[in-house]
Structure formats: C-alpha cells, structure tokens
Image: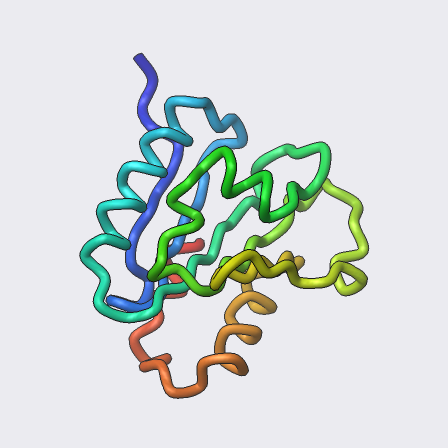
Length: 140
C-alpha cells in the first residue's frame, strides 16, 4: 500500500487551506482522502474559507470546469468555501490570463500559472486577512 500523495493543511489558520501533491500521480484513493479531510476542515471553519490547489507537478490533459470538480468532489460546494485558486500544471500549455473565473453558487474557481499569482490574487481580493501568518513554505 502506497502512502497518500497529498498534503492538505491550513496555510492561514481559519482562512486558507493549501493542497499540494509531492508526486505527479494522484489516485482515486488520494482524491477520496482529500475530500474527507477537506470536509472535516471546512466543517470546523468559522470563517469563509479559500483553497489554493497546487497542481504544478500533476500531469493533466486540461483544466476541468468548476461544475465538473464539484460533481466529482462535493466538498468543493461546501457553504464555507468561497474561492478556489488552482495553480495549473507546469507542463500544460494554457493561456491562463484568457480564462474567465467561474462561479457556481458561492464558490469561485480561478486558474493561475504560479503560487505568486495565487497569493497575489487572494491578497487583492481579501486584503484584511492576516497575511503575515500565511505559510508559503507549505508549497515548497
């Protein structure tokens, strides 16, 4: 049995969850474990919560739309979740600035090219969060 290929943690306690995959292969078991852990985190949250998904190392054929992500992983429709910022795979050639953010209910999905872009976007959208507590090392 292989070890889980993900890390899911608060990178800003009570406000932003980070998800990263140390290895490129993400199994169905990983997705199920991520969903269960994410559900528990969001159920305990008392604030609107945002999610940064780091897919830089994950080979993907394309960027799935929000409706597809939510259908496959219902926790992405959680009432506390507001913003999903997904960093595209490094190997995927996509004109990210040309993509329009998607909105479904109260959740917005935005694809970006880098961690710096993800953080900058959230800082602009939510300047009142305690950014001095953001754990950027989680993504390294």
